Length: 360
Image (tube, rainbow, N blue to C red; front, side, top):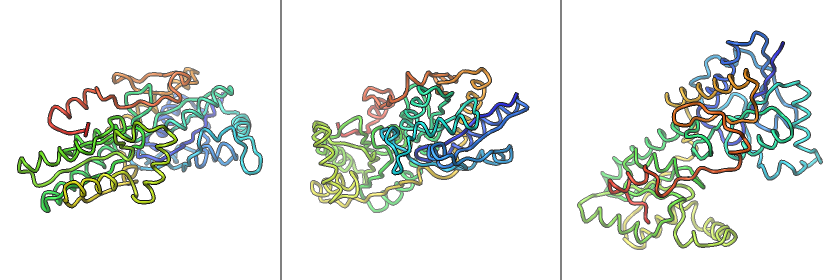
């Protein structure tokens, strides 16, 4: 009997999407003689509008080390999935019809939190779904690690490493802005690995006076420079007290003056210390390039775990990794939940123990 599966990648790209899809397909081809694999173009768009192609083993050869996604991706906000498109098309119904038209046994969806919520919606609509946790933020509840995270940590760490030499040479304060709007795992890990002196993340609101005090402390100790690793979503203690509506307004006003939070922080440091502050934003380089060795292994394990679940006929799950072991987590238990950095996290405690300031 032919087994038919669909593959799609949704949301932001990252380095190990191809490696994970390769793991799924290779894990199935070694056990199934008659397998048909359909790849949907540009995420949920391909599923909605019936844009897909049949993939062969050749498509998965040589992609273990290839970044990005061979299928393409796009962002399709979960909150708009129940809203008809410009032509009045019911997106959810359209996705179901594409699934049934191809007689799929399962749809394997690779993506982050928003992608996962739509995956769970399709599960609720009766489709056989398996979600694979992709994000450079490592913020998906129910798994200790997401593929793409470690590769991004390596790139962000390298950016901080490179800043060290010029910061030391010129005796400057440098800010390296790391990706992460809501969760600071990437900034935390890259900051520690790169030897940052101050780390500012969304989960630990900062006091600019304490940030300045940390810089002054280093100067008094004879240190010529200070490096701050700042998450995109870093927030001050004052702003953290605002309502969502007021904070949104604050961000709108800030955007008229500063490109991002790092520029606001830099301006305030300059005002208080009179010292020059330089800003480096690695940006989307953190998502790009080849996956690191760790992610290649993790992706292969997660992909193989998905293949095993398909062979077992178990759907409606996310393939996560818990305590070093592959785990099948029910989608209904993890969809819509963010895994935040706890201020009491052992990694945070270790960072503080060695003198890294969080501005709190």
